[in-house]
Image (cartoon, rainbow, N blue to C red; front, side, top):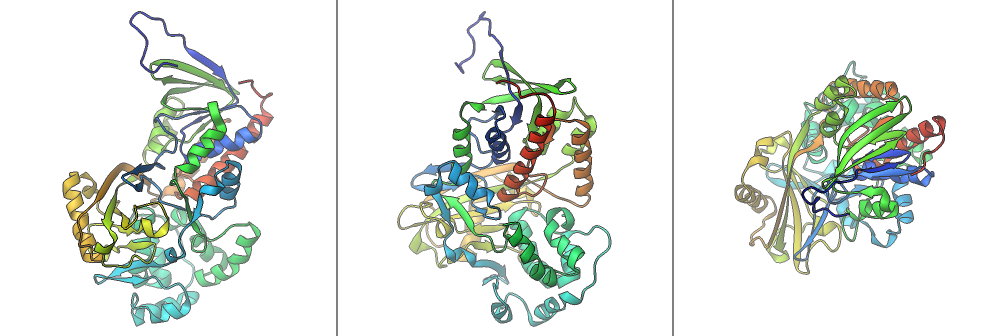
Length: 480
């Protein structure tokens, strides 16, 4: 199919086809949902507006460095990952992170401290004061909370302000690029919230919850192994797309979704300048919330309004390359996270080349610094040269970087990560009601069920199961 557009006066025939289900969006959520539906024998079509699949999960190779524009790794919290890797034939690319990555550093008073991983290390660490440690030991005796709480309220109530400031606050910045004062603990960390609700406390819950996770073949995120691929994280979505073959169409902009009768939909799109229509019995929208809102406006102004109310934090990631001998810190860990109290201009820095091979040329190191988030959104709007100077100044202070920059790649996402703010569960309940009132239409993405790669994969699996049940109970399979 030509992408150069039709010649003047030439009549363009509309592309028309029929499948069981259309997936709008070729990020990891949409691709996984499509893959599992195809595995069950349903005809699928994935429409991705970008030239490549993966969404934010892109891996760039240049000058011997490997830069990730989105997730740098994932946690193996579900066996679904290994199933995908094996079935897509990319086992030889699969890499667990260097064990040194278990060391995670937190900045306090301008110095990096390793986050303690066991009781002995906790007692010896200087990251927390004696008073802070004693307060943490009182956690089993703290009663249950009432009503919805922010992460900050929940953590300070259960384990104290110091643990919030120097453990949870930097962690929330690193994961959500968010502020613990704004995020709902029930929506952002439902398993943490459930420990108090079900067991009465975090310590008791973590001990008793291990047995239940083992029965579900799942791992807690603090115990799961980090992994990536030799060619970067985009290896996974590309492999899934390859398995799906012609079912994936890139450079395809979805224009509208219409319900043609109680059990059918039509999806119109443009591929280059060529229009197309797909008739189907189900639609899975795996676009970001703001993109899904535009598509749903004609179907439900209320659902579209809810989706538009979901805020996203902006993030700039900077992959920086240096000569190894010109970085004073040994980089013996995952990286460093920065608490708000330290008043720094970066959220943290990932030591990419310490975690996985092939991230930097021999004799070089690759660091990935993160700027902005809900903490300092205005920094993402700085010109690249000023942003670079700001980050280099911080790295020199924190990690004793003394050499010149030999590589730089800057990626800014104006709407990077959805913020599960206070009241968020009411938004999710409204979207649940919308789905129930529109049989065959499903919403899937990191604004529902968690923002991590593992959360997205699990959510996609659940959506594919619900879509499959709908397809089996509504007429016979369509022929694509």
